[in-house]
Length: 168
Image (tube, rainbow, N blue to C red; front, side, top):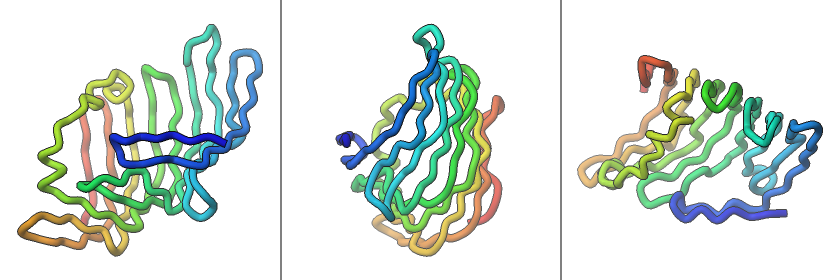
C-alpha cells in the first residue's frame, strides 16, 4: 500500500496498490490501483528501462469515477480509457474520457499562474487524439455566470499544435 500527497492539485491519492514485474530491463505493470473500488484509476502495461533509461512505454489507464484534481478553481470526476504509448521523444496519448461532473471556476483558473509544465520536453513532444464527452453537471462558472455544458469534443495535439473539434 502507498500514498501520494500532491498539494498542488489538492489531492491525496490513497491507497495505491501495485503488482510490478522486472525482467531484463523491462518493467511490466500488471496492475496499479489508485483509489478505492468504484472511484479509482487503474494502470497496466509496460515500460522499457534498458540501460537504466526509459526508452519505450505502453500504459493503459482506466478511470472509474476518478477525481484527478480537487482545487478551488477546478474539480472533476472522470470515467474512461486512455493509452499512453511510444517513447519519451515521441509519446502518444489516445482514448476516450467521460467527464461525469466538473466545476470550473473560469476567473480563478485564468488568474492562476502557470507552473511551466507546458514547456516540459515530454509535453512538447506529446501527440494526442482523444474524445472527451461532457455529461450533465459539467459547470463553467464565473461571478457573472453559471453555464452547464454537455457535448463531445475531439482533442488533437500534433506538430501543428492543439486543436478541438465538436460541439458543447
